[in-house]
Amino acid sequence: ALLTEANAWQELGETPKAIAAGEEARQIYATAGDRGGESRALRTVGIALRSKGDLVGARQRYEQGLAIAREIGDRSTTAGLLNNIANVLRQQGSLDAAQKTYAESLAISREIGDRSGVALILNNIAILHRVRGEFAEAKKNYGESLAIRRAIGEKAGAAATLNNLANLMSDEGDLNGATKVYEETLKTAEELGDKRGVAMAWYNMGEMERLQGNLPRSRTLLDQALTLRRSLGDKSAIARTLTSIGIVLTVQARLPEAKKSYDEALALQESVGD
Image (cartoon, rainbow, N blue to C red; front, side, top):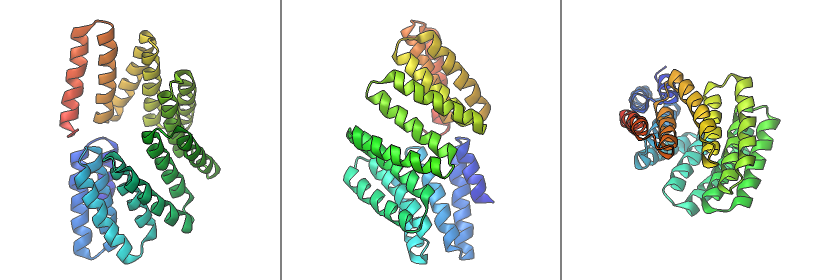
C-alpha cells in the first residue's frame, strides 16, 4: 500500500512525500525479507529523486535495487532498473555509458518477450540520439517504438512517443509539423480521458505558437493547460506552464504580470524541491 501511495504522490508532483512513502515501504519490505518488494521500492524512490534533480541519489537507489534484482533473478525488474540507470547516465552526460546500459536493458527485454519494455527503451534510446544530434537515428528508434506501442494497443505510450517525435521535429525547426503531431497526441489523450496528456498537448502547442510569434493563441493554449494542471495538482507542471506564460507576457511588455507569473512558478518549484 505504501508503494502505491508513493507512486500516487509522484504522479501528483509531490516528490518529498513520494520519497518518504517509498523509503518507508523499502524498510517494511526489508524487515519482512521481501527482496523483490525492496528492489521495487528502491526503484520508486530513485524515480522520485531523479524527478527532483538528485541524480546521484537516484542512481544510488537504482544500483542498490539492481543488485537485489540480479541476485533474485528478477529479469523484468533488472531490465527496468538498467533503463532507469541509463536515463540518469544520459542526463549526467555519460552518453556512451548510457548507450551501453540501454543496450543491456533492451536485450533482456527482448529475451523475456516484454514488448512494452522494448518500446519504452527504444523511445529512450531515441532521446539519447536526439541529445547527440543524431536526428535520423532518433527518428528510426521513435518509429520502432511507436510501431510496437500501436501493435500492442498501448495508446498512452504511443502518444508519449509521438510527443517526443514532435519535440524532435521542433528541434529541427519544423514547428508546423510538430504542431500537427501534438494535435494528434491531443486527440489520443482526449479519447483516453488522459487529463495530463491533454494538458501536455495544450502546453506544447502553446509553445509552438509562442515560437512562431502567435502570442494571443499561445496564451490561450497555455492558459488552458494551466487551468487543467492546477486541477490535477501537478506543481512541477504548473510551474513550467507559469514560466512559459511569463515569457509571453515579457515579450508583450506586460512586465508586472510577467513577474507575478515567474514568482509563482519559482515558489512552486521550491515547494516540490525542484
